[in-house]
Length: 297
Image 1 (cartoon, rainbow, N blue to C red):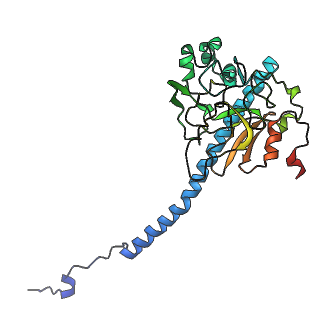
Image 2 (image 1 turned 60 degrees about the horizontal axis):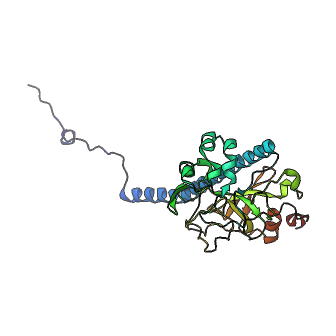
Image 3 (image 1 turned 180 degrees about the vertical axis):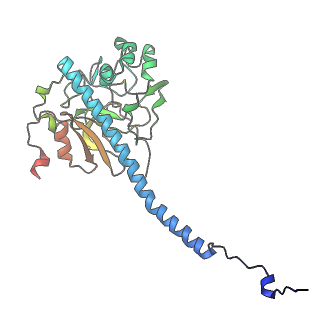
């Protein structure tokens, strides 16, 4: 009779080592991932803001092209506002038909144009539906304002873009030296400083009491007296002035205190908040006859 002999070690099951993380290794990996995320977030935010600025520039280009097409068709840029004696007060009183209303057929908004009754004015009940119609490229992607607001008992759709009516702070009137003002009929030949040196449109910040894109008031007209970007780190609306004759300057909610503007030659530029006041004045005046201050630096 044969006997099988087995060693004690052979009878015991072998222990199997499985690879894995120790607690220290896991904590190190989590710390590395957290550091990478912290480094990537500013880059992602910067890329998003760059995309928003690009979209805003594209909006400005589209408005500039529409204004050029209007000038080509009518041999003059549209009036900044019409239907009222000057100076224009930023109150929901009067006709106040603004330049964007005239531009509707040139920005593929023929339906809105056909439903707007110019003779009734910007605040008439007959124009309520058009007045509350939001046009997507009239709002800067960086703007925190709502596209449609309830103001002065009306629903109004707003815009982030305004035409330049004057070079310094002054009421909107027939004597302004910009391109879009009360009853204006400016042609390219009237821009004697050169279209490349003259500001046509730019960004504005919205606020309470906004009268909307149909209104030819400070809601769609500004001057080059000042650039007023949002304060760093804030998303607050623009303060509403008490004086209805006050118009105000251009501004934006872009990071870096930059304001996108469109020149009369169709070019789009970004102006810094600390742009020299003399440079701004010359950009806003279509015919000051002076050499550009920025070219003399």
